[in-house]
Length: 269
Image (cartoon, rainbow, N blue to C red; front, side, top):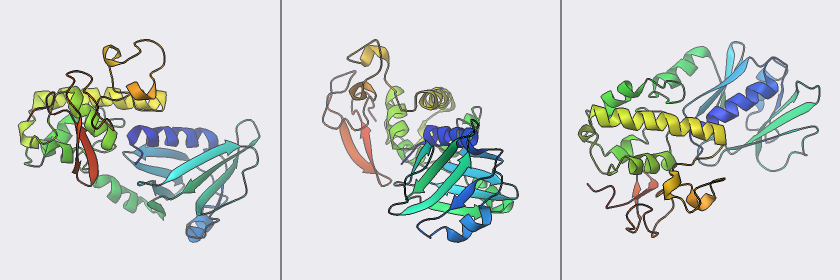
């Protein structure tokens, strides 16, 4: 599932490509036909993200998209390819240079037109987004610090904080030596403040690079130049491989429906 940095980049790129101009909206698949008809030809004001949600504002109506596990956008310039397969929604517009721009949405969990109260209802259910509310760590800790639930589960709860997914969960916990099984109430305010600040830095780096890189140079096989894929993470998807710090075999266990990765020594309970 795309994490917060990906949605932030999508919102920025869609605003740059389409905002301030009429957008032709269609639904080749037909599942979003009514919503597309309502938005078609209207001027896009802006696209914003919050956590894992996208909000495209067309005047009084807002297009809400949640990509879920399988949703993807593809975009380009010029003439778009002929619609194929389950193409939920297509945007066509005139780019800043006068040429055509387009973007296609497939497989999203949610693609719907909402009024302002419905948008506010979604936002009210979400915890602080480190990219949108970098000072929101204390609000997140009010939920974490009073909970018996494992911190590895709390980090995936979008009502606690928004935008963190499986990769950032595993990597943040490793970087701070925290067992994913530690109850939230055993994560004190000072530790959480350090974790939150680190999360803000990691997400911003993800926006800048367009990928998640969480390792420090001293823990990579190549300390200079571009970070190769094999060096990007400490524990995520490294089951059975040696920990980059202590050499212990990285373990995996399911937690809240997703595979959790951790080092049992560096992150001892």
